[in-house]
Each structure stands twice: as structure tokens, then as C-alpha cells.
Length: 142
Image 1 (cartoon, rainbow, N blue to C red):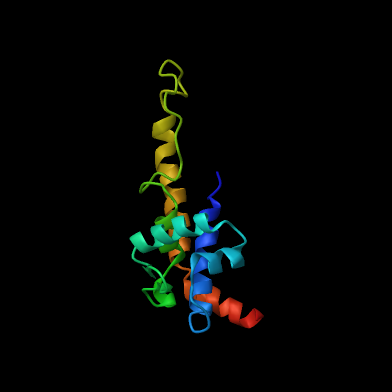
Image 2 (cartoon, rainbow, N blue to C red):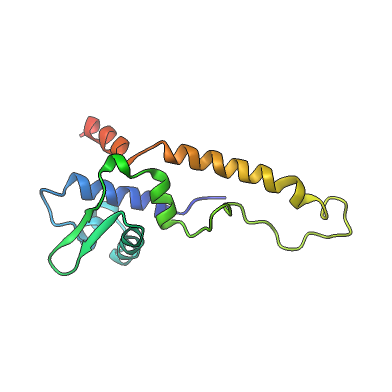
């Protein structure tokens, strides 16, 4: 299992938006140059972040900006905005285990609760980290 790069790209984007908000117009080209990816990828993620209510994007000359204070944007908010998974479905279960096999017919009963516990633990940890934490760490480095 691997979380896609959309998650870290989104964090990078939000960090740039806040860091450079007074100095530059935050466009998809500007963000793409920092992240070193195609602006089309940036625009797709901008759309997801906007839909989640984390940013506003002004067409034309406006650029993008945070809609919430960095202290109020958690990693879980970002994760949910850009990762296309439904609630409680982090782990995809194989579709048709053999009902004639003693393991196959019981595997869902055995694993479902355990996998949900793992997902909930990950989400609790993501909830505990904010964009402000990232910005604080960045300010110590630059």
C-alpha cells in the first residue's frame, strides 16, 4: 500500500501558498516550478483542495490562497481532499475469497475490524499534524 504523491504535493502547495502569499501571485505555474511537476497536475490538485474548502482560487490574475488558518488545516483534511478513497476503505479487500476454504470463508470476519483499527490509528495521527507544524519546521530551516 502506498499513498499517492498527491498528498505530499498538496502539502507542498499549501506550504508555498502561505509562505509566498505576500511576495508572489500563487498560480499553478508558480507552484509547478517549486514542486517540479506539470502545471496540469497542480491544477487538478488545486481543484480538489478548493472543493474541500481549504483554498480559494481566483481565475485570471488572482491566484490561490488558503481559506483557513494553517493551524486549522490538518494532514487529515489534506489527505481526505486529495486521496480518492471512501471513508473506512483504506484497505481494498480482494473480492471473492473461496467460500469453500476455511480461511477464505472467514477472512473478512477476521480482518475487517483489524484493518479498520489500523486506518483509524493512521487518521488520528494525520489529525494531530497541521499545516502550521510544517510552516514552523520550514521557518527553522530557511
